[in-house]
Image (cartoon, rainbow, N blue to C red):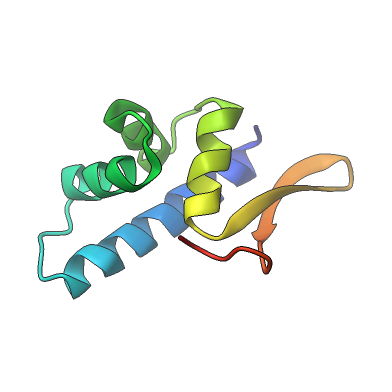
Length: 91
């Protein structure tokens, strides 16, 4: 996956997790966000933490977290990108 996808996932995941946690009146730190996403996606918390840190992760992990954010993988000029998934939306 490209650096652009890692950056997009990091930004969207952080923003969505923090918003969800704050709306529940819970702390919105790194560990809290990682645990929320892991619980809702079924992905191991260490893999989620890697995505939130912007570290390279597997295509499967990235696709699951992208779906959690209402994004889907597409191709633009031969490169993978993430776009809004109007069919399913965020979980």
